[in-house]
Length: 191
Picture 1 (cartoon, rainbow, N blue to C red):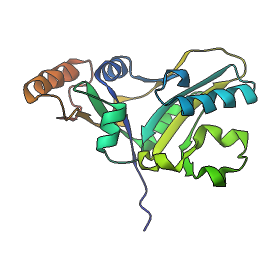
Picture 2: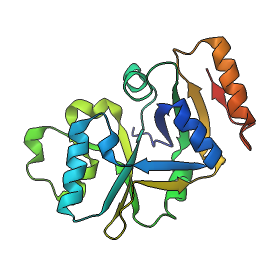
Picture 3: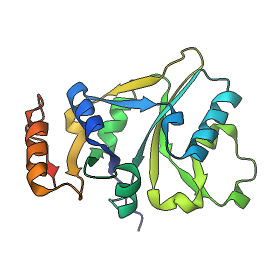
């Protein structure tokens, strides 16, 4: 039985969460800021081959939380996991011209051969398959941008989970701060 994934998890840190909640937008950034330099390289090559002025992305996971997600993408006590309703988030994205989204496909290097350039932003080596990555990509041939905002409604957020390394007393303060942001008083925040 194939189960339809109805959520997308964004593993990040508290400053990005607070910015996201305050401005009600997801910010897509240049892949050059990513820790995975191999992944960033292929997106830069994609940009060059397609003669694009801008390629920006934001990564999500269609997997439930794992130690790997927390340790790599939301490390330490400032880490957070934001669970979005996939359908609601994608509806928000549809209003942004030049944006597209898809699941990353994982392949052995030997089976990749010469994949079509259009598929490069959504391909990774099979070693990363447990990430179950989903990407939102923005590209433009005309505009040279460093960031792209995707506005969304707070209804897109199903829950926020604070870092497992955050002490309980500090977690309570962080919950109060989140609930104090305009319109966020009813958001589910787990610690």
